[in-house]
Length: 353
Image (cartoon, one colour):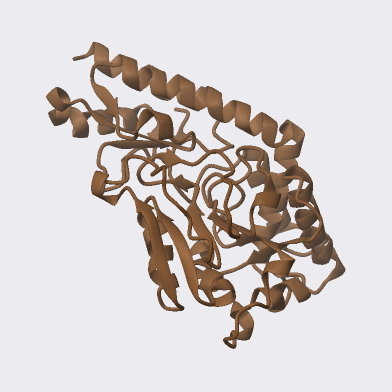
């Protein structure tokens, strides 16, 4: 039986990326990728190509650096304010991860929550808020994996814009010049777990008066080309294979087209099927994480549908405990056939009830 991985992260990877990474773990120029020194010229080529291809695919302008670090996006919750917050920062609270980032920033200075959808269980993206013109930066989380909402446009900000794009990076074209920092864990749209990407405008740094520990200072990693300490070698190699795959498939424009096709197919079925209903406001629905629950009169069928879907090869469709129901994560590597299979599963279950 064919299985489709709808898990929210770590997530589905293209089969050719998995194979290429596995092959390199067995034989990378005569050694295992898992045992080579990161100081070898062979791995330096991997790092350089991954950084260059990231810049090419997202059309990253001059004056930006691409970093591959450890520690996950959660470490960035600390590094961003450590490096940027001198007096005041502004945050948009759109979900659990945005809230965690905001909490960390409060350790470094004043933080203004410009808007929040927490009272509505984060079912929409707040609008009509004002960004303080005297803030050191404005932080957003573009896609909310738990609640299924997404900011899929590049915002205009009067202050440096910082974005956690952990779960929608490389799924659409972005105007990188509008951002001071873009960061994220790579284990959704870019790589296996273990590496964090940071796209940073170099001139944003050096403006805080506090001393910054060496490892938490972005300038350290810019100066050393992400090689200040041993980088996550295998995940970076995996990221390079994914970047090559995206380019081969037509780049981020092609990824964006596929994202819309997958989401349109699944949301149409959610809206049509009497058994289900979406959880996010229609205008803010994520193309990456599609969340839905049983319609009120069919709530008692939730466990039965989950077991039915799993029996049909749908993996990872159980929703987060704070939302319940179901979540189909449709990242770049999810083929349209996977969504078609899930839709067929939903229709079959409906026919039984």
